[in-house]
Length: 158
Image (tube, rainbow, N blue to C red; front, side):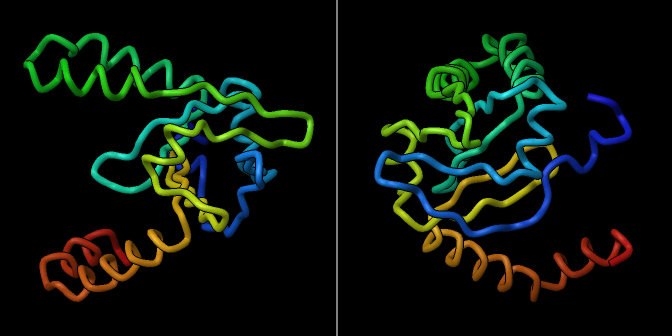
């Protein structure tokens, strides 16, 4: 991955449908990022403290898993996290139509149903059920009314 494009790989929010076989069409613009950064594979992991899944490029996954590997014995908590993060990850290959199959255990973890939201977030994209994403958006809007949060956002020049 070149450093010029490493800051904003995935962006935008889009609605998608999960078909009866748990297949998700990955948007073309996301597929282009995947192709540039590891090929026709996305590595899906559970979200952290969220009812969502995180989807990483293969190269980003290699970097993340190496970081987890090097810190796996730091504390018992990190050992458990490593087991959860690495053990529940799944490599999903794009088919000829640009679809991936969401594994049943990850689908259940994120409470995914037919209506999904894909959220581009820099070096990954997130997969949410539409209902859970709407709840998350409400939390975000509420937090943005907090003065400390407004100050943090303002410090970004926005």
